[in-house]
Image (cartoon, rainbow, N blue to C red; front, side):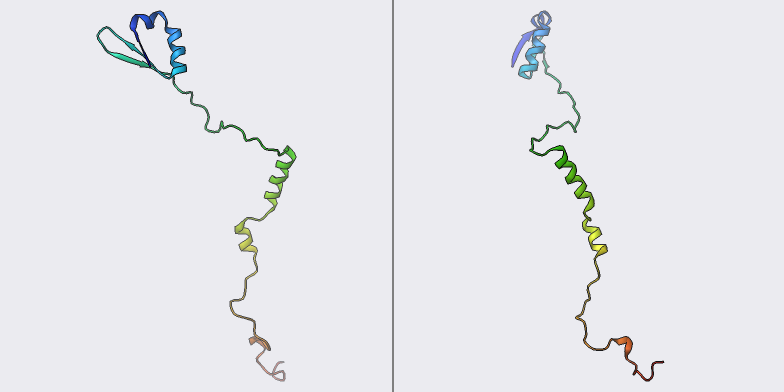
Amino acid sequence: MKVYTYSEARQRLARLLDEARKGGEIRIKRRDGSEFAVRPVRSGGSPLDVPGVDTDLTREDILAAIRESRERPTPGEVQRNKAPQPSTPARRGRSKLTTKPRAARG
């Protein structure tokens, strides 16, 4: 980091700003000894502005993957559509609903 006098900074302002952009910060010192820092402000780009990822996928590959993912049921849908499993093993023979003898059924 370099320190310039007020007079030097006034005469070479454009060059000092370029130097601050490259080096990060410069300082300007007054005769009374007070110093001021000049540093570049980072541009506030979009948080969605991210570098791309290089893949070997074609446009068609990506669209096919999106279509396939939309056709698959989500885990919640699988649970709702799943047939209930019996909690006890199935009994052999007659069920509880047919406990009456055949003659009594009418």
